[in-house]
Image (cartoon, rainbow, N blue to C red; front, top):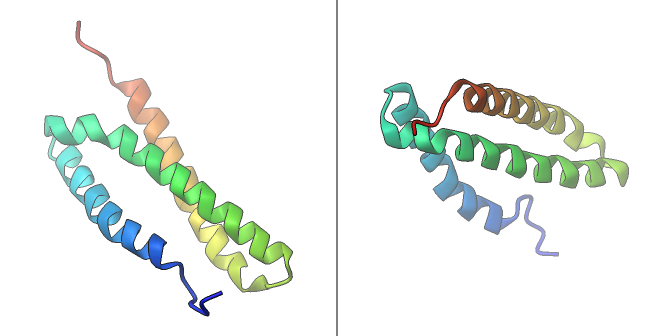
Amino acid sequence: MTGLIVNPIHVIDLSVVLPGLIATGVLALRGRETGLFLVVPALAFSVLMGSSIIAATLLIVASGDRSGFVPMVMVSVVVCASLAVAVAFAHGTRVDE
């Protein structure tokens, strides 16, 4: 154990991913093709990343450390919202032939 409160790999990953998610969201809101193309994969990534964070936090909470419960609930809300928007957006789009 390094004694750090966060995993440095997650910090590096999210320092690249979060700006990418923001850029994708802005492009999608502006109706740009690139943003609309990337919005579902970005939301799917958000669901998968959040699910892994929830799983890790569940293990921490199960070990007796209750301090991770509130962040776990907050991440769960983001995961559910991302999943709902991804499904709704995917169902609302059509592929032109």
